[in-house]
Length: 218
Image 1 (cartoon, rainbow, N blue to C red):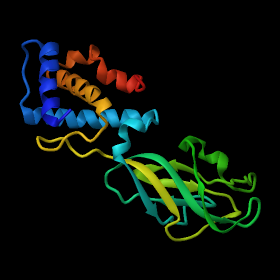
Image 2: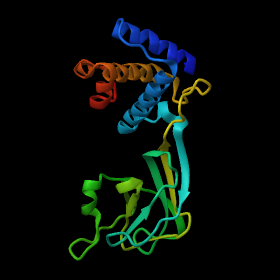
Image 3: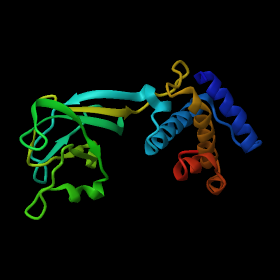
Image 4: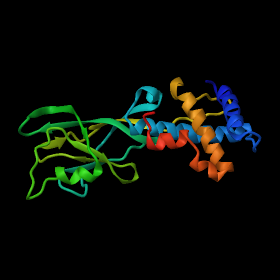
C-alpha cells in the first residue's frame, strides 16, 4: 500500500472499531503508523524472520576493540544510529592451533544469549576451544565477542555485521519500505494503538498489538 492507501485503510478500520468516537487527523495517523511499523519490525526480529523486512537489512564492516571485561573478550559498537536488531556476523581471524587458520580468514560467529556468556569464558577452571567466536548483544547496542586463546583477530575491518535498521518514517510522500505482506499488520497495529490512546479500557480488548507481543509469529 502507498502511504495514502494506508491512511485511508486506517480510517476505515478505525471507524469500524471506534464507531463514532474521536477521529484522527492525517498527520496523527502517520505518527501511529510509524509507531506500528517499528513494533511490527521488532516482532519479525524476535522470531528471526527476515523475508518481510529484507529492505531494512544492512551490512557494515567494523574494527573490533580489545580490552573487554574478560579474557579473550572484544567489543564492537555499530556506528549506525538506526541499528535496532542483530541478524548475523562474521569475524576475520587467525588460529594458532586446532583448527589452524593462517593467513587470516572469515568465519561465522555463533549468536548466544547474554545470560549464557559465562559458559564460554576462559579462566583457570575453564579453557574452551571456540573454533567460531561467540557473540551477544550487550548494553547500549554494543556487540560483545568471546573467543579462545588460540584465536587472534586480524586487527582492521575484522568484523562484518548484518543488522536491521529502523525503517524510514512513513510520510505523505514516502511510502512504507517494509514488505507489502506486512502493511495490513502495520495498519491493524496502528488502529490498536489509536484505540488505546483514546480509551485505556481498550488495552484489555486490543488484539493485534497484543498478538505481536505475545505471539509475534501470527
